[in-house]
Length: 217
Image (cartoon, rainbow, N blue to C red; front, side, top):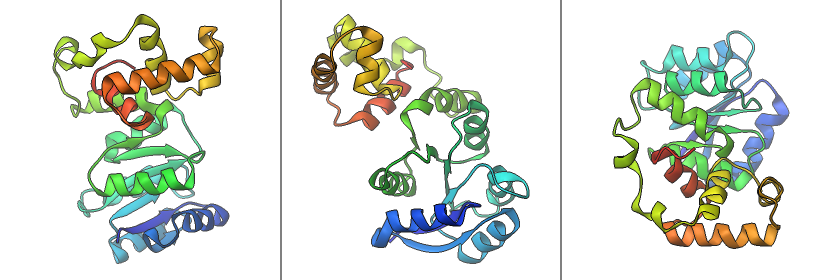
């Protein structure tokens, strides 16, 4: 079972995270600020740290920077109310494996924890462009030209399907996409279904990763 440590300065948030994760993981500890977080993570050595970005005493980034080299087997997943580019890029560059906002649902949070524990990179769809920028700057993204990185499946999409694909990958809702493209929600749903089928993808998270890999965000 994945062992999780929760760092957040709001007791209600910590309690909510525990409730949402339930018995699917083992929450081995929690902390409200930087010093106790560092001490607790050192003591428990969890598999995954759910880390709030803005904390008293130095911020979540301070926790990560203090322990990243010391505890290389610990995986870091930022869970924050902030979707500011500077926050996202800072924690990704510091070594976090993902960044999700507090609007995430309970099941999606559990999925994110499991995925980063398995070595995947996870981020909320609207943050995909920030994450890609951070990885590129850190040298973690493939350096190949766009032509080499682009999946052949892109050629199967119509011009409208490409537009829908990019907006979906960036995290827009069907209603928001419909408003931007002046089409109905039902038409957006149809295009989205076609996009996933043609690209042989199962869901929006896979689509976001695919779009990021192929430099389409």
